[in-house]
Length: 119
Image 1 (tube, rainbow, N blue to C red):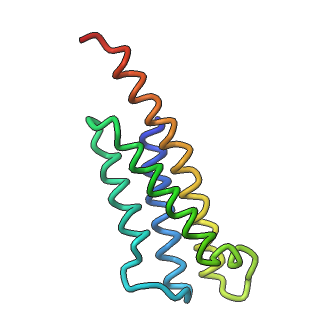
Image 2 (cartoon, rainbow, N blue to C red):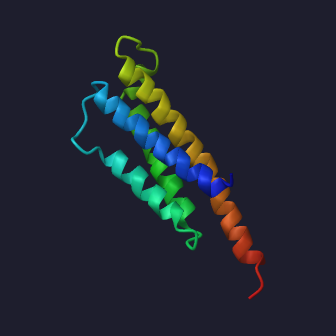
C-alpha cells in the first residue's frame, strides 16, 4: 500500500475509534466535530489529483491528537472499567498518529513527484 492509502485507512480508523468511544459511554456531541474532520480529510485524500490533501490529513490528525490529550481522554487509555471507551481511545489515538505520519509522507511524495515531473 502507498502512503495515500495508509493515510485514508488511518483517518477512517481514527474516526471508527471515535465512534466506538461514543458508544462506549464517552460524553460528546451527537456528531463529534473530530469525526467530521477525519472523514472529510479522508475524502480529500481519496482525490488523487490534489497534492495538498495530505496537509488536510496532517491538520485533522494533529487536531485530533491535541483534542484527545486536551480533553482528558488520555486517561481512558488505562481505564479498563469501560471497555468501549478504553478500546475506542486506543483505536482513535493509533489511527490519528498513523494518519499524521502517513499524511506527511504522502504530502512529501506528492510534492516531490510534482517537482520532478516533466512539464
